[in-house]
Image 1 (tube, rainbow, N blue to C red):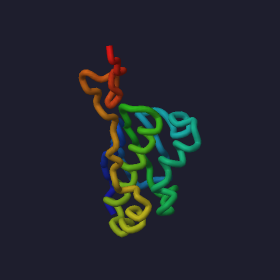
Image 2: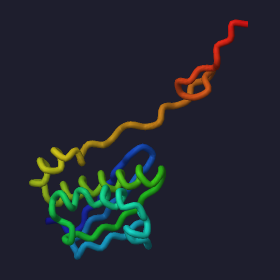
Image 3: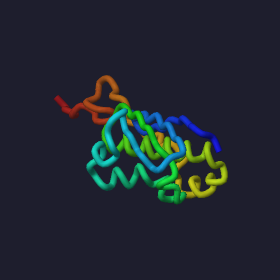
Length: 130
């Protein structure tokens, strides 16, 4: 087993860098904040911990996370993606379990760009006959 593993996870405009080391389950986000402090909403915390809970590795690894860009949901899902990739590097036999849960696939949906001559990406100007 590798001592330290570094991976990145992405979702929308959020990018999370994950450093996974063997330890007792400490999670530090952006050098100083705990998981509960950074994500006050329970659904975001559950999303972040999904790969560890699914593989039953919750208290086995320490995580140092650096996340930038986007909002809380995008950041939580970027962290989830990075943790799943890090677990895969450490223990390759977890691949079928993580793959079946859909944690290894990057969610490629992003905001569509605005087109010129339109109000938004697809919303056209109001039609007027005269």
